Image 1 (cartoon, rainbow, N blue to C red):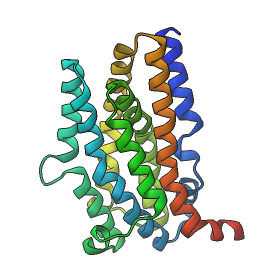
Image 2 (spheres, helix red, strand yellow; image 1 turned 45 degrees about the horizontal axis):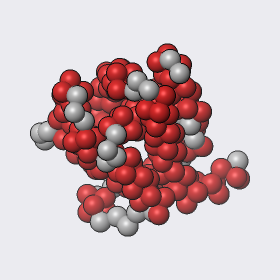
Image 3 (cartoon, one colour; image 1 turned 60 degrees about the vertical axis):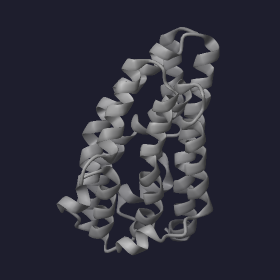
Length: 230
């Protein structure tokens, strides 16, 4: 398998599982979600946002390539440093929806959400750093387009056009354009043998499925009944 073939397969795996195809995000983009549904989603997804920096740090700890470690460190600093860290930006999004911080932090998460985070933690902590980077790529390669559509939907359908409501998505709309490029380059650099390439492909597939698993839980619990009536 050439590097070009590997990267094509990688992107095909993610495209087949792209979160914009998920019924929950389709309802968002059509304005079909109620504000209560958005609130439940915000509370569930905080579990993912809160833990995402730990995926980056776990993969960083397994990597011996200094250039790639520095790239991962930059990503981690963006996620966690300062008052405007990404979990805090998500809490502000929830504020804009009328969800209290106590509700966010004391949430009893759905089994789908807990399983999603567990899978991603396991992938990030594997001894082969390419598997962790492939899992990161499965997420960050999708986020610019997802963020753009979320911003559009929040403005158009939910009258949410404030800094608190939009900053999380605006930051990721731009930052993850860079992240998907550098993580893709890192995978091309790390994956030299067919075995290494296959391990990365398998990890990307499992990670993409895990992100959709969280959305499955939200959709099945709060949205499916309404969707069936339309």
